[in-house]
Image 1 (cartoon, helix red, strand yellow):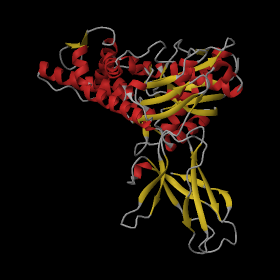
Image 2: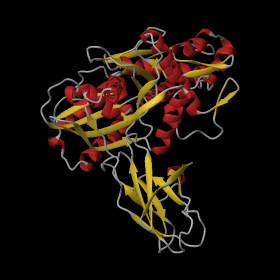
Image 3: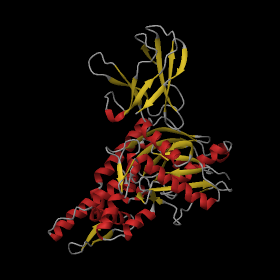
Image 4: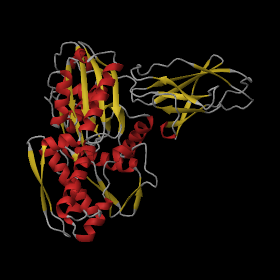
Length: 487
């Protein structure tokens, strides 16, 4: 129907989709014939190898070479976007960044899709977790542009999933919770689904909580049981650690379908061991994570001014939401089973494809009933002087505020004769405390010539449709576009 695509850039897997001539979103097969691409990359022979081919390179190697390549494989880069680790990332001696690796993953998705579709993929809607802040969204957009993509819009993953659920469906008005639990991130989003556009009321995310955490928790327990049974330490080399994580991941996935599974650990240094894992054991291991998820759901509902009984539908998305312990928690909390009518791994990409089609042909939004209007999903404020001591944060944008609407103005006085607006530090996050990791940058502005000493200025903020922070400054009655110099 169009040429724009939707992309779910995930922590463990990524996917790309497009709307066909029948107005139905379809995921696009990659070069390996799969609908999802592992979000991994390795640098080799002067280029990135992404997805399953990167995993195969490690798998085919033997001995010390396999261990070296396992250490060079980059995983889980989504958690690092906008917050790169100190010293960056290194793959086979190549120093890189999360943005560059994300760009390599996006480039493979677009390249493979171009071959399948018969035309060059360029325009895209890309999804991010709702709790992603300005820094993460800016870095995601930068990665897409580095991959040669033109970003039509960055939208929140739960909103994209809601598009998939409501597309072409005659739904009665009500309140829905989108429970989005992926490989590395989580969001609980409350929407009002009406006869017209659906509106996001509130959202609550947890950074760095997803399927990876569950896998690692099981891997730690398997290591403990291995050492108890063999009376020997489990090897600390990269290859052995990777084998343990792979085994734990397979067991985690199996326990979504069966009550008991067996993990076979066979290492070169010591005898092989078979460890039986039950669903009950796994549920006990991840119980604290499940409690965190429930608390986040409660916060999202409270922010929306609702109660659990007000929620008419509980919609699941993200592969990790198929874990029985997660679904059991939601069933007990809401006293009914959540809806699992869609492919949990693809619902976000499919929703992004619908949004991409709507961007190309806006009239389709109302025809298909698929419009979702987002809101501010993360708080943003500025550092102000605290008469009682240290500077504090004044939150100007709150979760639930409308997008593209200016906040209440904050007045400042311009002191001195400089032609530069005094820098104002911008921070994300709730509360009044200032944390260096939450600092987004500084508001700066070149003042017009002749601006008098002591002139009055007001600062206003908004978030655009991509969730990126915009600044407006009024100096003595003149509106001037402020600049957020991002760090």
